[in-house]
Length: 169
Image 1 (cartoon, rainbow, N blue to C red):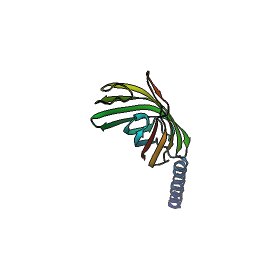
Image 2 (image 1 turned 60 degrees about the horizontal axis):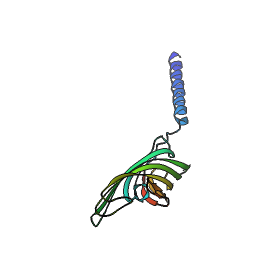
Image 3 (image 1 turned 180 degrees about the horizontal axis):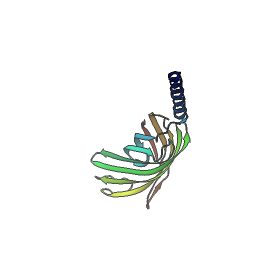
Image 4 (image 1 turned 90 degrees about the vertical axis):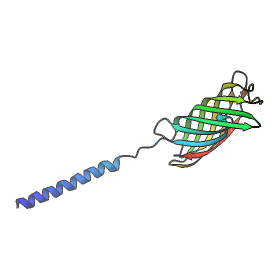
C-alpha cells in the first residue's frame, strides 16, 4: 500500500508541475524585434544614389531610429560623394508608416561641375525627410517615397524628393 501511495503522489506531483510550467510559458508574449532596413535610394537625403542602413533604437517596428549611408556619382570626370546621417521617427502601424526625419549630409565634389556649391569643395548640408514607408511586420521588401528638403546657409530646396527600395529584417 505504501508503494501505491508513493507512486500516486509522484504522478500527481509531476502532472501538476507540467501544468504549472505550461501555464507560465503560454502566457509570455513574444518580444517584438526592432526593425532594421537596408536600401538603395535615388535622391532623398543622400542627394544622389546611395546605399543605406536604417534601424529603430528600441524593440519596436515604429518610433525613433536613425540611418547612415554612402553615395557616389561620377559622370564625365565630375565626381560627387555623399554621406547622409539622420535621425527619424516612424508614425503608423501594420507595416505602413509616415517618416519624419532631420539630418546632415556630407558632400564632396571634384571636377568641373558645380553641385549646390563651388566645384572641388566639401561641405555639410542639412536635410529633412517626409516619407511614406511600407515596411513589413516581419521581414521582406521595403519601399519609401517622399520629399527631402535640403538646406544650408546659402539656399533652401523645399521640393527635393527621393525613392528607396530595400529589405526589412
